[in-house]
Length: 199
Length: 164
Image 1: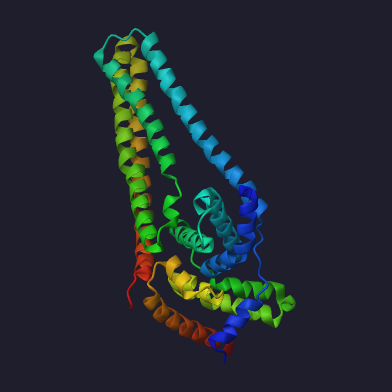
Image 2 (image 1 turned 30 degrees about the vertical axis):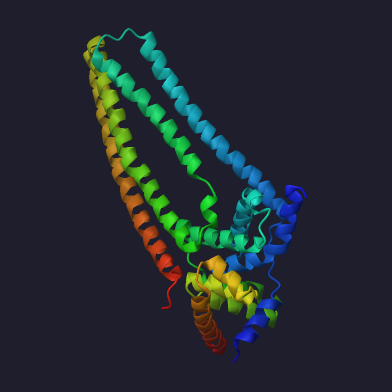
């Protein structure tokens, strides 16, 4: 039988040491920061190129129908919305909350997780709907300009795209929901443990 | 003092205890190293805010606690009960009795609730109660009661474990 003092002496006898040095931390810090920044940059450049191509097509092509102009406005707005959402998301990764009391920090995590869920599901849904609307409106004019065969192909492609978005979205939202539910449960359990009450 | 020199000093003074906290919380050596590293990366990013703080260790502990809490949130990994067994089995006879006792102690800590794991590792590392209260955000009065219960629970777990 051992008492707590004996456990304390076992604890102090331990030789387990961290395998990370302060140089490793600094090296990793630079790597992570560069990794994050370049990932963001690549995504932004990708979306920027897509927006530029759309703007070029809009200016260079002699579109005559209002539906096509609306399609272009919607599609370009979607690209800019994506870029802005990415920037705001990146800005949210700050460390101020790390110094909060654990109880408040857990609440912050809950809110952050919930906001991310909204972003990943509802906003994605809106994004897909608008992008699809852009596609459909764009192809109205194209159908007048091209042969029946091409029009059928384009319409089929549009419907396949809608179906793909729908299936993907449903699966994605379901997975996100399950993950969020589990995380919230974990956070609530943790929150209870840190409540300053004598239970 | 340059930022890097200050960081080195802070790292050397606190890394062992932060590692113990992370190890106690996750029950896994590799994850504990990752979490400790993550904690000190955040410390580096907040170093300017710390420069004039009297009790820098309190803030580092707070970051470590919050980092550990985020870890379970993201990875949803529970402490690995079998881990300490694995250590004992794989290293076999190399492990001295002392190491076996330490492993057993970590195994028992892993069976406590998350906040209990955090509090008890700080108690074992002999942090003053006032500092533990400041880190965990629990009033000192309640903390004393909690610590008393956790000590009893851990001792019981350890002795039960030792019998088998």
